[in-house]
Image (cartoon, helix red, strand yellow):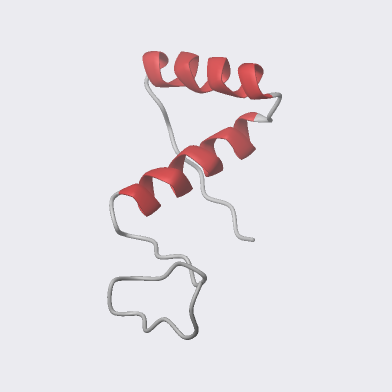
Length: 61
């Protein structure tokens, strides 16, 4: 995994520290998780195992 460096304003740094502390994560892991979730929610990152409406279903339940 490659790392990137970002500069955050004070309110964002505080919020990230709160999130990290609440979930027992490092700041780097918290930032990575939040970014990943945002990318997924907004359609910029698709997960390979997700199915869309066009996926054909085989079998019956």
